[in-house]
Image 1 (tube, rainbow, N blue to C red):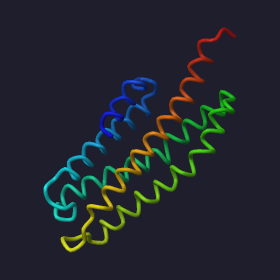
Image 2: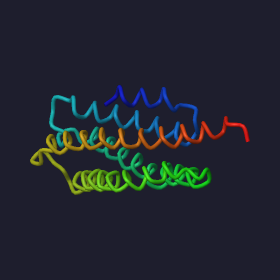
Image 3: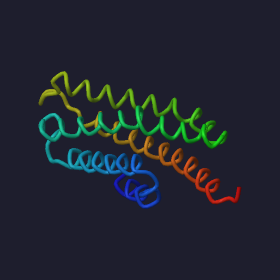
Image 4: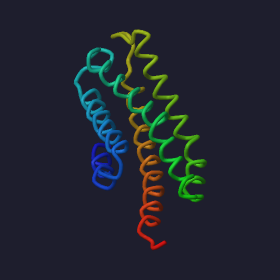
Length: 156
């Protein structure tokens, strides 16, 4: 997961400050996920790391939902990018489902995930969902960015 995050930064870093900042948030989310999932104790037994991860998780999915996707869709509309808009219509519902799962995980932690509550399986499942989400987001960014980049270089 961390490797794909670094690849995304290499491919789209510098494209737009909003996307750059968001990809850095993704990198931080992956780093915190890895620290939590690699820890010898169960996630519920590491409240500081769990809280830090959940905070980063909510920040990341919120930025995607309320800032990045809106910006990408606005650009697609401005460029008349029907392919990008269609792709967004196809994959956005799945991203929304993953967002709901991420927020449900956060809510579960907020409700007092304790030593009695084993979050190991839930964290592992969330990691798989986040990986899927990152792939969908990368696809959306790549299609929208490549279309816009090609239109910017073509002579008028």
